[in-house]
Image 1: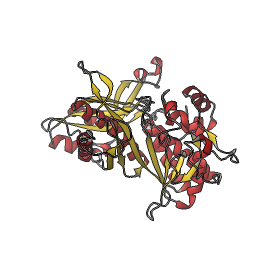
Image 2: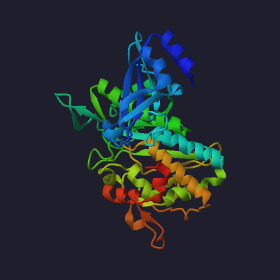
Image 3: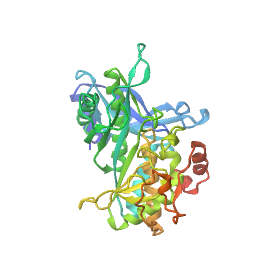
Image 4: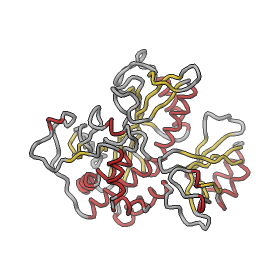
Length: 394
């Protein structure tokens, strides 16, 4: 947790030459401006301007001047860059020229949700992520193919699993950047991998997930491979999920949290599953389509895992995929949970059947609905949602 003075001192003493100021568009794609270390003091004091009209989802040309303000607490050294003339990265908040916060700044949206939960409800939420991705070979021109790096399957080992060395390098790099991965393994699909993270506060967890995707792509490229986070890169194979584990500091509110998230599941779908191919993934291979919850049931939208005494409130959201914007998804999940708490909502009965087999849907449960089946239908639901408008403010 560095202060601005700590960062300035570190930059001067540790031969830092370049500072990357990172932020995100509305899809969650990381962007950055690189400034010389000599300009950092000014960046802290006045911000660094950029053209917002060129960023997806941001403002039009007539109101396009926005400013980046580096967050000193997020300082991280890029370990693959040279030790002489180091490169560091900080995430930024975004403001208008007059200093007012920019309403489409994903990190500010999430920070505001965290503040509301804490100030108005006395509750903190923790998030842990399980992120899946594919590794594909490159062709002779260095372009990505759909040829998997290996043909291994779930939790296989070498020599079938060829991804273990890359996963190791990814984990080492993350540790050097102050991020602690918890576990890694080969997933079901050929060339498919997963790395999991221990829970953290919402903003840290989102920062870690965003950094993780960047590191995976960087390490894959250095190994002559392409890292694919799309939801269904191979038609007849497992899709890639972004499983989200949520814990509430007040375990007595767990059922309210489940109920609130289920109540808004259809509205959340457009942000959790934001690509056309997302809807090819839902309904099979560990990607639920039914809006239900169950204990240890991986076919439901929310799975409540076997509980340990130190994490009695944990639940897992199983439908999001790896192309989602974690800042917006975490924001919406917090507001949905708070809605459940505010209105004392109670969830329906848990489901015990395997809902990946449609014939198992209980005939006496009209309350069990499905997620939208196309991106267009999910978009229309989100656009007409007063909950989404109030939560995001745009």
